[in-house]
Structure formats: C-alpha cells, structure tokens
Length: 207
Image 1 (cartoon, rainbow, N blue to C red):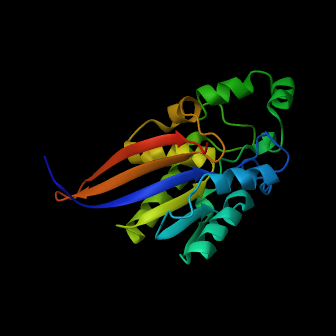
Image 2 (image 1 turned 180 degrees about the vertical axis):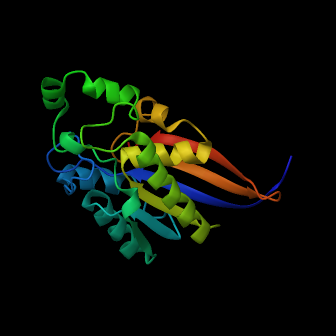
C-alpha cells in the first residue's frame, strides 16, 4: 500500500437542455434553453467553492461556466478538446429521424462506436483520445485544486473512463448522464508516483 500525498477533486456537470430539445448535437453549437439555464442554476449551490472552471468551447457549456466563474471570481479555462463527439451526418437529427434514414446504424454505434461510427463522424477511440489528452494536461496544470468541469454527456463518460481505467466504448452505452447531472471524482497522487482515482458519486440531479 502507498499513502496518497496529494489529491485533485473534479466535479463534472453536464449542460442543461439546449434550444430545440432532444436531438443529436455533437459539434452543433445550440445555446441552452430557458429550461436548460434553470436546470443548471438549480444544480449548484451558492455556497459551493471551486478554484477554477474547465469547459467545452461550445455555447451550451461555455455560457454557464463563464457565469459561474464571474459570480465566484475564479478563472474559466475553455478547452476545445472537451467538445462532444462529432456525430457527422446525424448532427441536428432526432432519434426517430436517424432510425428512419439510417436503419440499424444507430444501434450499431451505441454497441460499438469504433466499428460503427456515425457517417462522417468520429470514432469513440478518437473522441476518447482527445478528451483524455486534455484531461491529463489540465490536471497536471491545476493539480491539487478543486475543479468544476462543465461538459457534455460523452465528455463526462470519456473522462470517467480515462480516470477509472474503464473501456470507453462500453461507457458510451452503459453510463447514463442526464441533463445538469453531477459527478465527482477524486484523483490522488501516491508517493510511488502513481495515481488512484475514486468515483465519489455519479449522476446526481437537483431536486
């Protein structure tokens, strides 16, 4: 056994509902709806403290991250690599539209997003790699702090997969991440140079 010598805590929150309701929007840059803003604001408490905020460069994440940073006087770091997976030809389409036009391709993607990526879109492995590289880079830069990451459902899945050493393809279909839900992960740096990541909670929503 090795004792943890320091730790970083990351709170991850998915954006609220965007304008236009439920649809496949990976890189599509829709803003939050009025409901989405309400979901996000109810998901955090006024007395919560973070040292910094990380966020996707897309509006549905960035706008809320900037509001939190301004209200608390803490830095906000916008990271383009934390954008959602690129859904290619499915961008902006509802589930029933994809099923009608592409048949079983949607189900195949959720089962194995490497073998069956969205047409013209991103494989899960490529998505995972860019999220994991950004995660490591920011944790090294901000080590020992309490961070808030405002992201997308897929980004949260990939971040947890990377931190916990889980298969990213499986995480896409087996981990539910509702709008404005929160997760927390604690990463400890051990005295042998390694890391230990602990999932403190996942999927909490405001009541």
